[in-house]
Length: 295
Image (cartoon, rainbow, N blue to C red):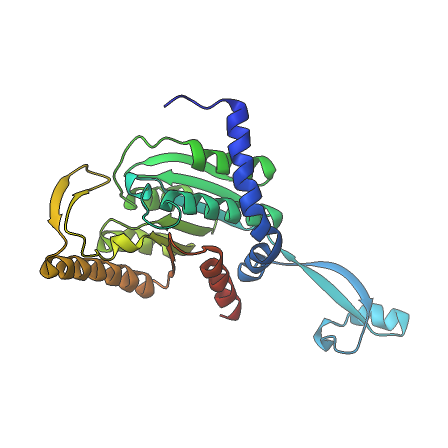
């Protein structure tokens, strides 16, 4: 594949920016701000007391001097650090409905990065397969968002497999400051293998898992003989989908893996968002943000 020119990169990144900017400008950015509080509060100013103000915020020194009640106002000190772990292994290049899992993930990465920057938070990116493909340390600024979107679109993975333990272990070693970590993946590897590295990371950081999936990874229709290929290993098998037993065994295997992932995340108190390639990803993301606000 020919390397794209600078103008082609700018054009494609702008397409993603335009597509992700609409939800970010509105409900996504606002919900993000409410869901992830800053590290503290700092004094802003004093103003005259108004009915309904909390009496605990009265500044008694100013009130005594002015012979009229005044209250202190505070603003939230953000200084949050967001890190996006994006699985770009070969299995991400699959979908039978809607967009490829990878394209859905790119849009989510772009929206999260833009929300972070608009709320004056740092944001970083780690692209992963069964190795750490690329790491962009958290920073602020529009150029950082541009770089994150560009890398999610154009980085060509060196490896095809999936091993989420690798980025999780690396992050536990390099992240000194408490961070909010979004892990965007189809979670094709065994969830039990992730338990220990997730637990180590969870002890210090806030982790949100975003699972991308396609309906054909959950169940097979009765369409006769088909050739199946593992996206990551290239292994091929001939499957008879008219065989009810085969379809049931496949569905049970998938349900068992999904159950293990759900059990691991629940036990570690890690939020899990599931997004299908055939649905609008904005709704489950917004639902999650609103849930965090209520909690």
